[in-house]
Length: 193
Image (cartoon, rainbow, N blue to C red; front, side, top):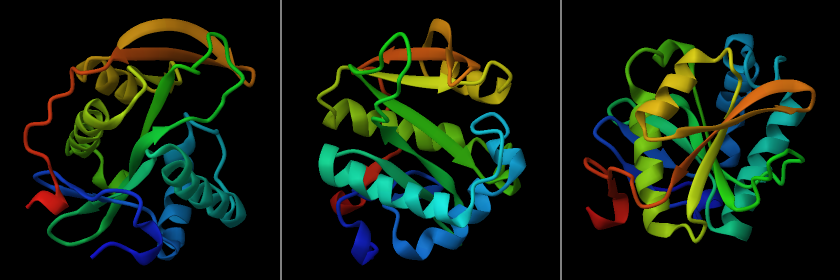
């Protein structure tokens, strides 16, 4: 059953994951994720406060309400355990080149779930959903050049190097992917099963 405060995000099932919208009851899980220096090392470089994490959850809900896409919670389908989060966003970043024509994809998996291919499984499902539902033709991702696992994941899922640039004074690598090339094998929206 979907969380009552996350009805705008469709539920997606993969072989091992349930992707669902964030709810207010996810604050503690998200705080643990965003508060872990090993998780945020290549993103913000510092753990997020509870207040910052709450603002992030509200921003996720706003994406779904205003844009029709956003982030999902990743849960283990067998145990219901919180695995991480991933999704699509429009952050209106002040960056060159502009990301205005792109939905931006991102992913985070709790360290205890690393090494199992769950980020790949989640991102593949999100790309397939995006190919079927987004009006923006392309998806981009912004990755720290030191985040080798995320660089490999992006390349494995069809993203190609776009450019190297800076964002807020830090070096970043931009990857992009043309729409319509997602592999939706093994996923179903929960409403269709």
